[in-house]
Length: 202
Length: 202
Image (cartoon, rainbow over all chains, first blue to last red; front, side):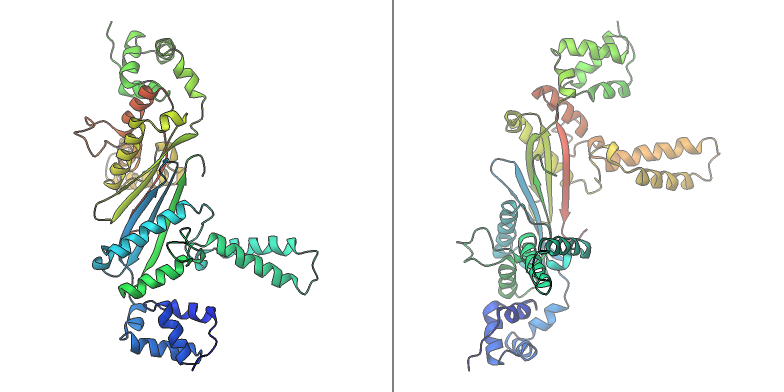
């Protein structure tokens, strides 16, 4: 049986730690797109690790840095997981380093996840977009503004961005890379925080 | 002629960019401890670069990082100067890297300079020390509290700290190393900002 699976549904399911994109997609297809049933199926398939991981706090991790060769831009990131064993894993450290490189090349990045965007900032953006759409018919204005807000979030939210090294990472977003690493390591992978310094900029 | 020169006076004079510690000390000795005359003398000795530098903004610089070998602690620093030529200078970059290493080993560091300590934080500390001295005679309490505040600033303010690699740096403070580098390069050297991430800590 093959049903049309919306990317949104796959994405939602993937936010449950421990499940990779292909796992989620095939689980959704098997359950005809029912997310709750798909989660049940995944928990069986993945030996209940999905459910277990959800309650575990990521207290181990790694701090990695990237400095542009000219020394004008530098980034520090912390990526967390559940065990020191994974924190020292080659793929895990490589993910953190690649993330630092990505942020160095992405000065517009302001937040790790959409949840971290303060309500006030989100509302301020929305107001600007509503004003920009003032010449459009009233009934379509909210939709236009919401569309622009979504675009803005894709710009400023790290997890929503496509990795700058698109060739190496097949055009996947940071969230997709994170989720795949979580599935591969069987642990929560949490981008905890980052900071970017550029000489002559605040 | 040899007069007693207070460390404070040497320090104040050294804050004028471009003058090293020994330059300042000998200038103060020659002028019998008169700071204004000493500055005049320094301006002559150093070919007026002291006065000129004071008005120049540090808009070039370098960003450097240090990661503890276990990947559990990382530091990013920005050190600024006046020209790209100095920003790429070996000694300048080495200073920034050594500073990152120092901060990685100094988790108590909270501010670059004493000027950056918010008044509210300073007053809060002072209140604690005054209460701690409540059993002492009233007339000595302020002095005890001020002494403890000074000790606290030496702990939390980067420029006041002795570099952790005391052997390599002859027990000098970060401010002394900064000032010497400024004299050596003939440019303003400004520790602009730093950040320290440790896994499992905020």
